[in-house]
Length: 247
Image 1 (cartoon, rainbow, N blue to C red):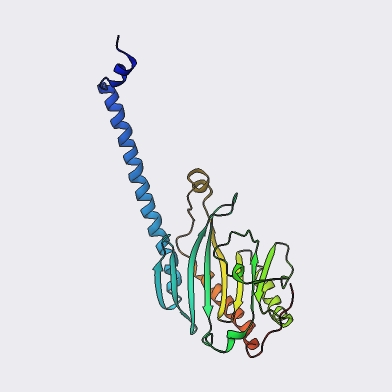
Image 2 (cartoon, rainbow, N blue to C red):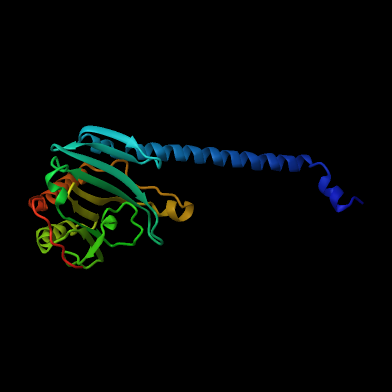
């Protein structure tokens, strides 16, 4: 009777070889399907700002390392950028797809450089890597009351700054898809939710799939109008040095 080692070393039977080949073929097929799925996902990501590009003058689209697009151009004479950001860092929450927009003022290089900065972040978790509000140094009292959590920060904020922006922030954040709004001396920025991730893909496969082919034109138009309002809110604070107020 052969020893255990000899049994292990014996050549595989035809049946065993067939089973091994079948398993290897199955792995190869799964890998091929996964590559195809990834390729389709990357192509879908690239098209997310195709509709928005038609609304922007001198539109230039670039693709980030994660496959999501960024659009740079002009709107109403102002330089703008639109960036698609996917976020899955919050535990027990479906992935979120955000649209991060920035609008610079033509005079950003001079008169408004000495003005105040103020921003509000809705429902903060502390994981918002895309947030500009988290980059501001001073925590302040939110300029309006809400039935959801708010984080407000600024630089050189005065009582007049809060008075001029409070009503506008309140109006903008009445829309639950608005995540962030910020005004700085160089211009304004907002972050809006595009879509929430597919539950099945996230729970079963830990993948981020979003039920949207392209960012809707209405969302882009609304966001650009909001950026103009934010840019105008503190336009006349530029010519004086601010006296900061405490949090």
